[in-house]
Amino acid sequence: MTSSALTKPQMRGLLAKRLRFHIVGAFTVSLGVAAFYKLAVAEPRKKAYADFYRNHDSMKDFSECK
Image 1 (cartoon, rainbow, N blue to C red):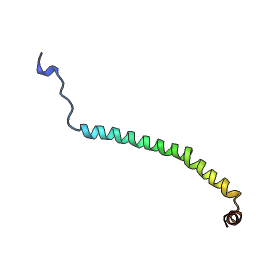
Image 2: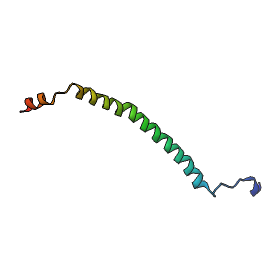
Image 3: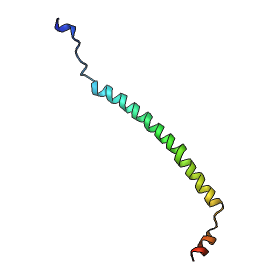
Image 4: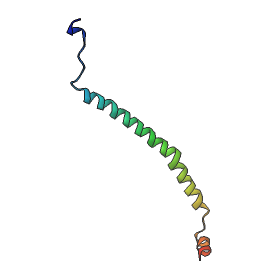
């Protein structure tokens, strides 16, 4: 068994290679989460507020509180 049979591990540029991979992955995951939040939370919330204020009578609420 000679020492040339074993391959040397890659050390030069390893951090940059791994960071590039993880940054791309983190960017795609964050875009997916942002799109999910917009479609699952923000849009229904905006619709609920619009529906509430469409039929809302603030003077009626004021007179009830008074």
